[in-house]
Length: 228
Image (cartoon, rainbow, N blue to C red; front, side):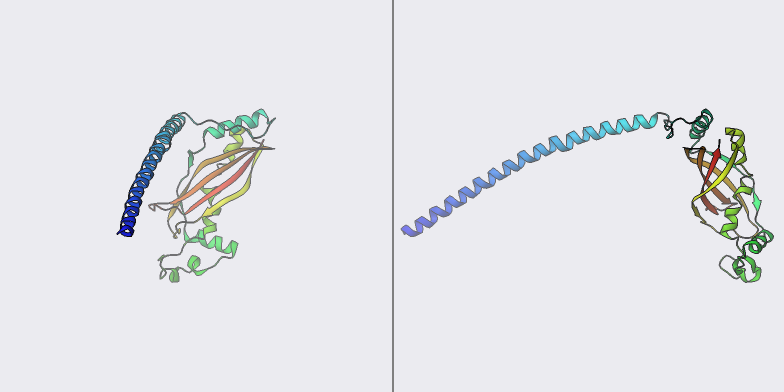
């Protein structure tokens, strides 16, 4: 009996200690969660709200013009830089419609020796998924000066530039084919302006659209430099 009583007493003591330990742990966890709630959720929400209001107030203000990256730039270059920067993000040119007929496609094929049947064989192309011949992608790209009516020349008058040179392209895509006989036109938008040693460099977004088609025929980022 004494042995059994000893086991019973130890079990009760262990049970009581376990309950006390559990209560202690739960109490500590409760305190920790309260600290987390106060310092993380509440404080961070306040900071997030303050950041939101700060961001919103900044966005409501007119955009700040960028600082010129080159010191000792000429007055003419600075004037062109700031005036062009003010017009970033706006479509400033929309050209007239131009019909891309089979003669134009054939002429480009003869010049570039790109005579793939989808461009030149009218009968075979009529059985293709396009149901027509289509213009070469590079033909659409090469027509940008014509579709924009040589609008780069206007920069010479605008910024009193000595001349304008084509620096290159950032990227080009042909989202939709141009079928023979459709009409296309182009728009231009300034997306970046930078001062360079001899003038101002302009990056433009060119979009060539097809009449009655939602997807463009071509999108390209072109880079031109105004030599001042």
